[in-house]
Length: 434
Image (cartoon, rainbow, N blue to C red; front, side, top):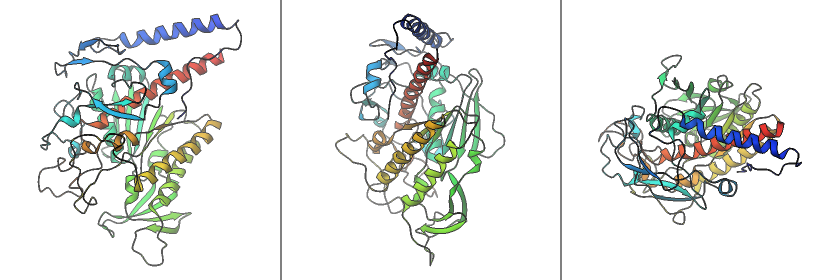
């Protein structure tokens, strides 16, 4: 992922004093704004080797040692998505008792998960640092803005993690248009920040043709060349989109293009060509990103979040597979393979195509590459701790979603980092226009 440098060599010495003054004033203002709010007890700027008590209403009375904000040289040369998990004794930053937004199936503490060591890690990029998520700084940056999560239940998992992390500052109010739980909107009134969720696990238009299907998880008609209007008609107003998909493409599906059947994945029907899972996914993702590029009024940033691999061991999800590890892998202990690798390659490839095309149209695409970090966290899933024993659930051992609190909270560290880079890009562009 290309990171644009903050400092540039300016063309003439005559412009240097003026631009340096503008840069200095802007940095001073940006530094002061996060501090000018009543939540002074949680510093908006992270300080090197300084310890402070968080005495907010949800404080656990622990001392938190903050890491410094990444220096500019580090940001220009460091890929924050490559690294290792290291100990973080200060985590977690909320509990299942202090956050109402946790989905039942990810509420691992409620359902008796006995170990807590999986909560005590943070991501350490190779060659630099990634600051722990600062909810005050995030909300200051999101003032008068909006963000939408589009995709499947892992995307919802990420959004609920974000809501829990922000709960140390403020809880949102529900401003949803109706009672449909698949399409929700919340507002942080103090900051005029809107957060929305659009359920669209395939991203394209879908019709369920059989609720059971060959594998008892449904049979779906996927219209690979038709983006799902449930979200495409709603997103032009948003400043940020976080797009995810992939896991649902392992389900039995019949593929359509131009309203004609072109093949299927494990549909079990005669005279229909069996195509690969990735065939349908690549077509659908290409359609999705083209749809965003074609929206004339959308001026926001699209984050394409890469796949977070599942960790079934000892069998498939419906054949006794489980995830019982209690600690992360080191990066040299596992590799991405199988369908997860295919999905990941497709995401990176289609992202590059969309970003290149979008640049011509003034559209901005960024890759939120969570794959390597989450590949190393087989310990972060609910397993059997997303329900009571003997409950009648489809996914009894859940090795797809992530416990809350848990490793998925780190995704907000990455997101805030990327939002800071967007702010610097915007500042750089504004300086070029002066």
